[in-house]
Image (tube, rainbow, N blue to C red):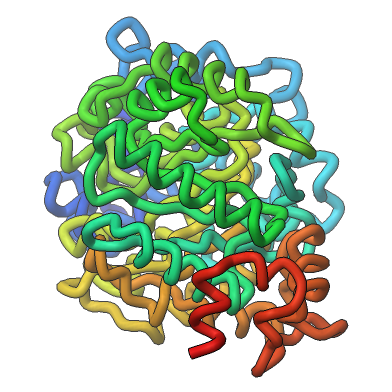
Amino acid sequence: MAYATTIENTVFRFGDLKTLLAKATPERSGDQLAGIAAEGPVERLAAQMALADLPLKTFLEEELIPSENDEVSDLIARQHDAAAFAPVSSMTVGDFREWLLDPKIGQPQLEALTFGLTPEMVAAVSKIMRLQDLTAVAAKRHVVTRFRNTIGLPGRLSTRNQPNHPTDDSTGITISALDGLLMGSGDAVIGVNPATDTLADYIRIVSLLDDLRQRLEVPTQTCCLGHVTVAIKAIERQAPVDLVFQSIAGSQKANAGFGVDLAVLREACDAGLSLDRGTLGRNLMYFETGQGSALSADAHFGVDQQTMETRAYAVAREFSPLLVNTVVGFIGPEYLFNGRQIIRAGLEDHFCGKLLGLPMGVDVCYTNHADADQEDMDLLLMSLCAAGVNFVITVPGSDDIMLNYQSLSHHDAVFARETLGKPPAPEFEAWLERVGLTDRQGRLISEPDLLSGPLARLPLLASIEAA
């Protein structure tokens, strides 16, 4: 089906729905690389006008990737709840934007609508929204998850403590994890990206992190971000696996490039649940996504990268995850060229994930060859805090020495807590005060007594303090 609109007597035609969506997407280098972007701002505006007039139900009638050839498309169709969709079923995309921004629409209405929306509907409305629109609507939608603590409560910001090490050295990982904990980072998860993906290293890392957690009595969860099939083997050996991690994408072919499909993810989720390690809840899957992953795998089928990203959220929500985050600037400038594109993408991803019912976090990051810097990341962090993001990722000094990219620092988490008024998960907040790392106002104590309470139970920490 073709779509068209007219601007000053010039007719702009778009051959099918995926072409319309691609042309309506705010400028980004990935779509230009794929050859599907608008030729310029006028064609983009025309596409956005045509998209705004499009009935939402069109997305139920025209698949971007045929479901007979793609299990993600099939999943999207099976997830759709017609009764939940009913309140907005007569709306156009433009009408839907106005409805979302209506002050009378809040958490109850947005939560009820969750499975009435398809990823394509959500991606479409995001393309005609300003940054403040994306922020305002996302701030109204809260998604709360639990494992050993409670993540996503209104007004709070959790953090992933990311103690990566270029050789997976146990001492290096421990010191880096402690560095984050002493700065109050790690209530979402203490999660290591392993430099290798062997079963032995996976088990060593999860055992190391679990020992640290137990010795310090930290109310959090840990994760080795190895491949999901390695996690399954580790669980079979009764390794202390809290969260099961996997990178995912928006098409069957792209997921195959990651070495997974829906059946493998279900097996992994069931395996994790069998250990019954959660104390407050059973949300234990951890997914990472990122705009451009499907394009980089030649698995986008002509669909724009932001819509492909949003399709990955259908995969994520099938497994009731504890955490989902978009590694927004990690894939590189080929897909998000500069700070402006990264900021836009981060707010889009967070908005789309929240509307689809996901506990969204964002790795506020960029690669060293992108046209971006930490001031861009400051702007994105502050915008995401206003939007109610569930968590962000922090590393020592903003510099991940294993993955070689720039993220947020532990100091940025302190800024968010103390200046923006975003405390961590309540259980973790209480722990920080109990062990003497923060005062009753939640402010970091500059010279904590490391040899009192649970902190004294870690020989490495005691030896560092003594030195």
